[in-house]
Image (tube, rainbow, N blue to C red; front, side, top):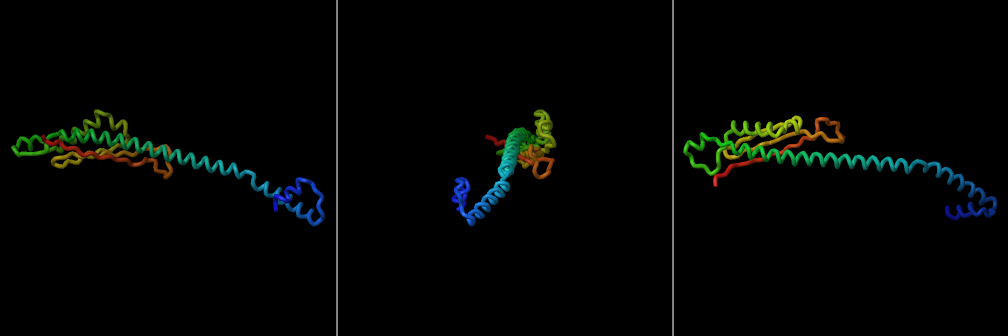
Length: 173
């Protein structure tokens, strides 16, 4: 029906008085409807831009956390290997037969601290925490750090907590 009325309005065909009121109403309806649609595209574009910006921010945050997690895992591996090489000489020279070299707790902690200092990890990772766990035959190093992300949605300025742990042994072969 609106297409028929639009063709009547645009064709300027004479119509009788009853149809004239319908045509007038249709023209008034078209004018009102055109006025209500103004700015709708602008709002939609603003909404889409906000969604895209948030999506890019989330991807950037996830990528940064992923890269830092991989880096921390690599440093934890290196520190654990260094700690596993701290042999508890008193146990080895006591004459006991062992299949895995026993690890000295104090030596492992000293070696890990030296590893962190030598590689300047405290400069690279602000507020980094390193924990060394010693089992008689294995050294576990856990590294924790708060990654500051570009887009903070929750208001947490301390960053996203990231941790990595590595365990190393020194088997005798």
